[in-house]
Amino acid sequence: RIYRRAQFRLSAPTPADLGPDEGVEVAFAGRSNVGKSSVLNALTGQRKLARTSGTPGRTQAINCFDLDETRRLIDLPGYGYAKVPQAVKRRWERALPDYLRNRQSLYGVVVIMDVRHAPTDLDLQMLRWCADAGLVLHGVLTKADKLKRGAAHNRLQAVQRATAEDGVTLPSVQLFSALKGEGIDELTGVLDEWFAV
Ligand code: GTP
Ligand code: MG
Image (cartoon, rainbow, N blue to C red; front, side, top):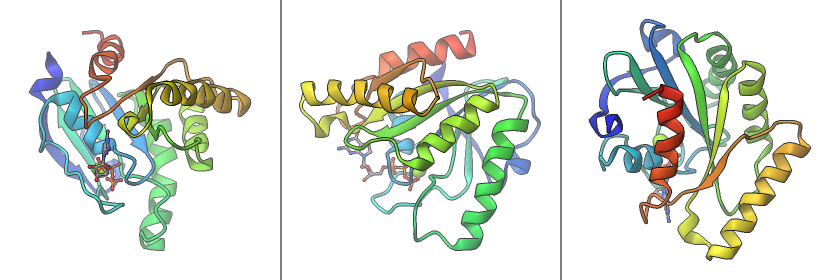
């Protein structure tokens, strides 16, 4: 499994610092503190690959993890955290759609949301930017351990409905729990297709 071989390569302050726009990359996006870094760690089976934290806004830069010479995973800074300095927020609000639109090697985006909450306006905006940029999308509803099984499945349908109403289709959405290690195989299956493993 290539995901287990993920290695931290660099931390880029802006998309321009990511390095050559070659090969294939897949980005992980979501609200601040939603559990993006934890999804990456669970996926790669490396508990300390991406720094996680109870403090929102921990991942401020774009972190790049190489799977092999041509494939990589990108941990994007979380959006929507009020306490991030205005200047940083504004810079990112401009850089993100730009990265999504112009990065040739970016193939798809895994959008991570909290299973307990409806997609926020920023989530929907993120999905629209991705769709407009012609990127493939996959939704991950994480922290599924916080809900009972039935409730979690209801949330799955609610998210599909909410996004469809907003005019963005999420071709696939899944439940995930980094805590319980649930949903890793399903996510791996999606990424295998994207990376053509
Ligand atoms: P930023 O980089 O700050 O935007 O955060 P992030 O989205 O990378 O979140 P991170 O992975 O750092 O996790 C945030 C908090 O949620 C941490 O306290 C994690 O322990 C917790 N957490 C992450 N995933 C899960 C999960 O599946 N279940 C539970 N119960 N808690 C989780
Ligand atoms: Mg993070």
